Length: 91
Image (cartoon, rainbow, N blue to C red; front, side):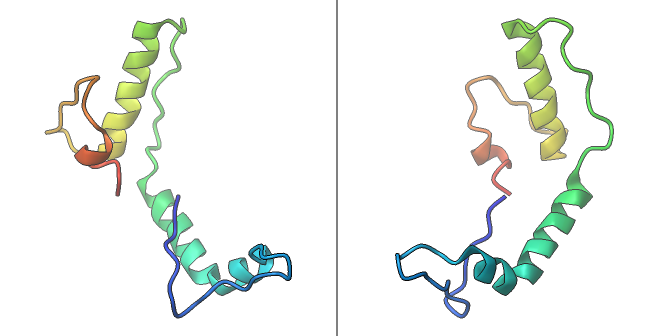
């Protein structure tokens, strides 16, 4: 998960130049909660069975199933060479 920061809510830095994590978490608490809620609404409740054997074919089918369920779009038929981010996994 990624949250893009806002210029209106700049990070607070320590004397050594690192981001003060607790302060950043407090400042972005609403955005973080909203993101976790949104992700929770999208989780597929029925997980596919793990592969019985962890060979290339079984794992490929398993990963393909996870990606197809993540996309929530039955019209997308991805091949192994397709860019999943250009096909909706960037949202």
